[in-house]
Image (cartoon, rainbow over all chains, first blue to last red):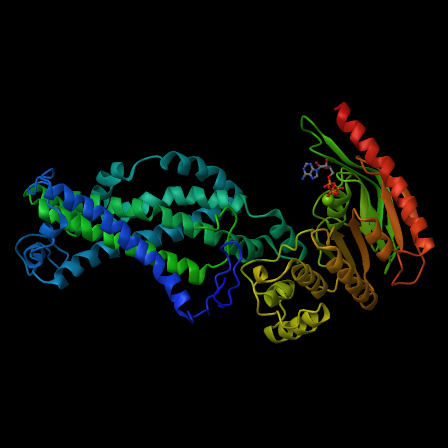
Amino acid sequence: MTDGTVETRQDGVGRNMQQKPRNPGALMRMAEPLLWSLASLALFVGAWEFAWWRGWANPLLLPPPHIFLANLPDQFRFFDPSGARAGALGEGGSIWSVLGVIGWTALRVTTGLILGFVLSLATGLAIRYFRIFGKLSLPLVTMLAPISPVAWIPVAVFVFGIGNPPAIFLVFIAIYFVMTLATLSLIDNVPRNYIQLAQIMGCSKRQIYRHVILPAILPALFVTLRMNLFGAWMVVLIAEAVGVGSGLGQVTMMARNTFNASLVFFTMTLIGITGFLFDQALRLIQRKVLWWVGPGNAGGL
Amino acid sequence: MLGLSIKNVSKIWNADGLNPVPAVSNLTLDVAPGEFVVLLGPSGCGKSSLLYIVAGLEKATSGSASFDGIEITEPSPDRGLIFQEASLYPWLSVRDNVTFGLKIAGHTPVKRAEAAERLLKLVGLANSGDKRPHELSGGMRQRAALARALAMRPRVLLMDEPFAALDIQTRARMQQHLLDIWESSKASILLVTHSIDEALALADRIVVFTSRPGRIKAEITLDMPRPRDLRSPEMIDFARRCEALLAEEVEKAFKEQELA
Ligand SMILES: Nc1ncnc2c1ncn2[C@@H]1O[C@H](COP(=O)(O)OP(=O)(O)OP(=O)(O)O)[C@@H](O)[C@H]1O
Ligand SMILES: [Mg+2]
C-alpha cells in the first residue's frame, strides 16, 4: 500500500473492519467496484441501443432501455402492491407498488434461503453426529439432490396450495439438498489439527461440534449459500409465474401473455438489480459476521 | 512410576490394509518428570506417530504408553501438544484461543481473563490479546499456541517441530523462551526436531531415531548448563556425533526408497 493507510491484510482474509477510508485513495478503492459495475452495465445497454439505432433490433420485440424505461408510470400500473394478484387493475401505479411487488418476491427468497441454510446445516451436522441417522438419511439426500426444483412445483402446489408457502418451499428445496451435501463435505474437511486440539483440551463430542466444527465450516457454507442465491431467484420466479399468483414472476408471465415486451424487459431489469443487491447484501454479511476463512474456501470469495 | 513411560511401542499405519506402513518399531523410552527430551531423526521415521500415541490421539499397534503409571488411552489436558503449524482457531481472538481449554473446563470469564493476561505476558504477547490469529507473525502464533498449551498446566508438553517454520533468529529466541518457561513450569518436554543445533541447545537427553520404522539408535545425555555455547569444542563434538548418526540413517532411508 503506497498511500499511507495502514492495512493488515493477508491473502484476502484479514479485512479490518474498523478501517475508515481516510483519504481519497481509500475512497477511490471503495468506489472502484461500483464504477466497474456501471461500466459493465453501460456496455451492455450501449450495444443494445446501438442495435436498435441500426434497426437490427425490432423495437416491438426487443425494445431498448430508453423505450421500456421511458414511460415508468405506464409500467408501474401493472404492479399490485398487495401481493395478492398482479394485473392492470388494482391499486398499482406508483413506485411504491413496484417496490411492494419486489418486496414480496424478496421476502419469499429470503425466507426460503434462511430456512434452507439453517435446516441444511442442521441436517448436515446431524448426519455426521448421529451415525445411524447419517447412514439412513445420506442415501436419501443424495438421491433427492439431483431432482430439479421445477419437478417439485406440482408437489409444492398439492401440499401448500397457492400463495407464499409453495414459493418459499421451492426456494428451500432448490438449496436444501445441495447445501446439506456441501455441509457434509465441509465437515469432512475440517483440519484434523483443529479437532485433535479440541480433544486435548478436553472437549466432548458435542463441544467439538459446537465450538470447533460449526465455526470452522460456517464461512465456507455461507459462500455456498451465495453461490446458490441466483438459483433460488430463478426458482422463485418460476414458482410465482406458475402457481403463486403474485410477485415479479407473475408480472413477467402476464407481460408474456399480453405480448408486452416493454414490461418484460422492465421486469427483467428489476430482477437483475434486485438479485445484484441481494448478492451484495450477502457479501456484506459474510464480511462482517463471518470474516474468518473456513476450510476449502477460496480467499477471493 | 512417575513420568512418561513408553514400553515396546509399535505403530503400523494401515495395519489391515493393502500396504501397511510400519512407523514405529518396538520402542521403549522413559521421560522423567521435568526432563527435557528431544527426538531427533530423519524425515518420515515415525517421530510424529510416536508423539500422537503419547498424546492419546492414536493407538499403538502393540506395546503401551503410560503416564504416572496410568495407561494412556485418550487425549488429556495433562499432555499438551503443539503442532508444527500453530493451528490457532481463526474465528477466535488470540486471547480466546489461549483460554479455549479453560472455557471448556468451565472456568468463569473473570478467571479466564486473569489467566489470559498472565499467559500472554509470559509468552511476550501482552499487547496482542485482542488480535486475530492471522494478524500475528509465525513466531507470535507459535507463542500463542504455547500459551494455550500452558493454560492447561500440562505435566508434559509434546512439541512436534514447533519452530520448524521460523527463521533462525526467531527460532533462537523462541528456544530461549521455551527454556525459561520450562524451568518455571517444571513440566516434562518431549520435543521433535530435525535440527541438531536445536536439540543441542535444548535437551537434557537427545534420542536419535533410526530411519523408518523408528527405533532408538542412540541416546546422548547432555548435562551442561544452559544457555549453551554451540560453538564450544565440547558442543561441536556432540554435534559431530549427532551428524554422523543421522547421516547413516538418512543414507539408509534413501537406499530403501531407491529399492522400492
Ligand atoms: N495418519 C497416517 N496414516 C497413514 N500413514 C501415516 C499416517 N501418519 C504417518 N504415516 C506414515 O508413517 C510414517 C512415519 O510418519 P511420521 O509422520 O510419524 O514421521 P516423522 O518422523 O514425523 O516425519 P517428519 O519428520 O517428516 O515429520 C510415514 O511413512 C508416514 O507416511
Ligand atoms: Mg512429523
